[in-house]
Length: 151
Image 1 (cartoon, rainbow, N blue to C red):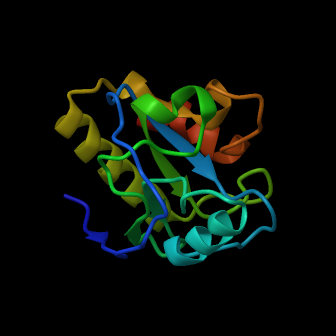
Image 2 (image 1 turned 120 degrees about the vertical axis):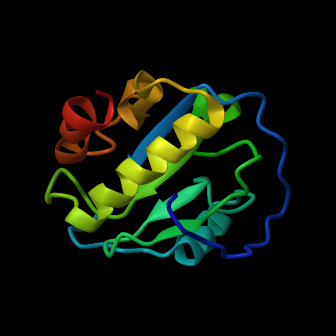
C-alpha cells in the first residue's frame, strides 16, 4: 500500500462522486521541474473560483503522495470524467522531461491499490487526453501509461 500524506485541506463545497470507472492521470504542464504540493495546487485552484484542488491525489517529484480532494468526492480535473473518476496529478511537464523513478514507483503502487479497491481493470487507467482535447499528461508519461501501467 502506498502511504498517502493527509493534507486536511478545506473546500468551499464538495459533492459525492457518482461512481468510480477510471483513474485519470494528469501532469502539471508549465515549466520542467515544477513540483507543486497539494496545498499549493489547492491555493491555485481556489483563485480560479473552484472549490479547491481538482485532483484527488498528487505525486511529487520525490514520489511522495499527498491527498488533494477527499477520495469520495467528485473531482474537478476532467469535465467528462469528474463524476466517475479519481484524478491523479503527477508533478512535472512530461512534454519536456521524464517522470522520476520515484514518481513512477508511486504511480504504479497507487494505481494498483486503487484498482484493487474499486475493482477496476488496468485498462481503466487513462490519461487526461483520453477524455479531453489536451496533451496532458505529456507524451513521456502517457507513453509509460500505455506500455507499463495498463498492462
